[in-house]
Image 1 (cartoon, rainbow, N blue to C red):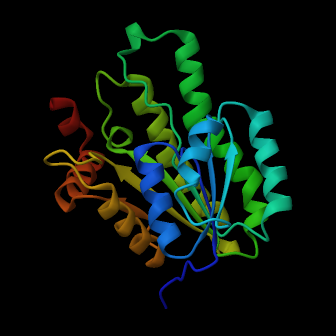
Image 2: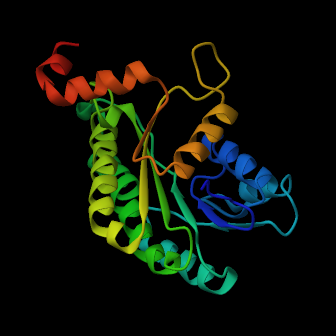
Length: 236
C-alpha cells in the first residue's frame, strides 16, 4: 500500500535552499505538516509564509552546533505528536582542493555533513517510534566517486552513504526505512533535473521503501561499476 503524507509530520533541514524549498512545497501539496529548519530565521519565515498557514513550523537549527540540535529536539517534543519523516538535506557544500582548505573549513564541513546528521538522527529517532519511521539522507555523486576539487566534501558525502547503510542495519528491526539519495544537477538549466520532478521522485522512493535514489539509471550503474572496480574511477 502506498504511503500517504496527509497530516504526516516531515522535518526538512536546509529548507531555504533550492532543494529544501522544492521538497517543502511538494510535501505541503500532499497535506503534510512540515517542520522546516535552516540557519537563517528571516529567510525561513519569508518562505514559510508562502505555504499553507498552520501547516508549517519554521525553526532555526545549525547542524554544526550540538546545542542548536538539542533545542530543535526539545521544540519538536512540544510542537508535534511525532515525527514521521526526517529529511537530512542541509549540507556545507564548500568545494575546494584539500591544499586550499583550512583546518577550520575541514572541521566545519565534517561537523555539518557527518556529525550533525548523526546527531540529528540520534535525537529524533525516539520521536519517530509511533510514526512512519522514514529517514532520508541527501548525499551526492561525490560520495560515490570522489572529485579532485571537492576532497573534503566528497569524504563527507561518502560518510553520509555510510550513515544510511549503518542506520538501515541498526534500525530495520524497529521498522525504520532509510533512503540514501545520490543528488546531482538540480535546477532549471539544460541537463539539470527540475526540483519539482526530483521531489516527486523522492516521494515515490519513500513510498516504495527504496534504499537508494539515483536520478539517472546510467549514473546508478556507473557508480555500481566504480564500486566493484575502483581502478576505473581512478582513470577518470
